[in-house]
Length: 206
Length: 254
Image 1 (cartoon, rainbow over the protein chains, first blue to last red):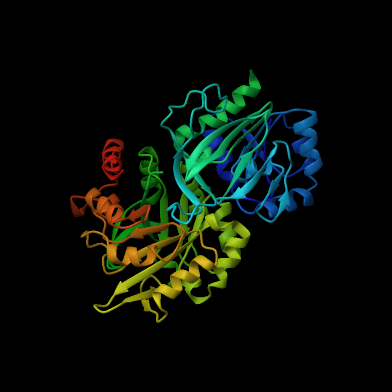
Image 2: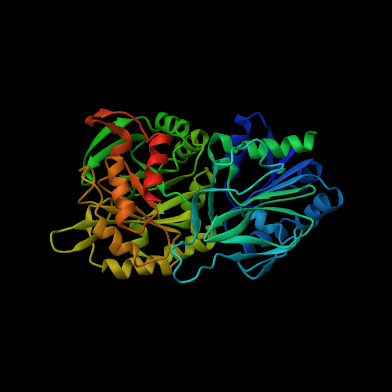
């Protein structure tokens, strides 16, 4: 069962409905029993990093997720803030994350002559994704919807990072063993964007 | 990154309408059907603004927002009548990415900081309606009905300081006239802030978009008439530039 973890950050109903339209059934839950029995997880989320970790802790999900992801090694897909939570630390709220992927999350920061605005909002590309599991089958010109002010700076030799250019290159996709994450919103990147989630589900099934 | 081109759909109850200078609204169709068509056309984003909500003291029906969310395969924002963070939460829970606040932001800018602290600035769009009276730019609220007296520049700067994610800038005096954007207003506002500014008001054809993106430093534009009428205000037809037309536009702009 694919479980979308509900920790009070963002609209999960929309992911659940969109998945149904490509034949993937999922359950939205914050219940430790339901999450314990899941064999695939999606960690979504929009909003504040520190608040997200606070909510996860409050729901008693930190230990459980560590157990599921690190010990049981079940596949997990982080989306947007969910990706950032995989890292060791975020500047947003000066807060520790799960640390499943070595690296940190920091705010976009540009030289004063740079015209890029923050947040990074809009449709952008992912660079060179050969051999990526999530990006399999996508056209290299495919654009995805991004909306974020903070981004991941990965520092993990065991992980594969893909980049997106916004003023400079930042890590927009990460794949490491059973861990997958994207900074953009596949569930909001037109019908075709849902293929990211199909690829994730197919990885589990093969 | 490519500029965003965003259809704005105006709601009156659960009907789509479009006016001129914020008046003379004409029925242009069923919103859910429009969303289906825009989804197929792979538009960048959609804005839904309920033009009666503030003056009626309510927000758009949540069931209706859920219906939109089910059909919308791209991000969308909902605005109209939002006054507190519980309403923001309700709307985001229905599946909208963002809320658009206007009158309540003007009346109390702390509402912007409160909302962006809880939901993140990316979820909070502050909309500013501006009218040119022949001498100066004035801010209006309540769907354009009420002229206010705060200084535009100071207000725009305050919106950014309070943590808005984007500004939706509408020029009432260009609205529905299909003569192009007020690029002077856009520049005045856009140069004050470092958050994205979405310009709206007067866009009718792709050349207007090109003009605005060429002569200002904004990255996004919004339009209503252009995407719901074809040929004239008599011909209602949901439309959006083709991928090819957009490729040509962005090629010329780069």
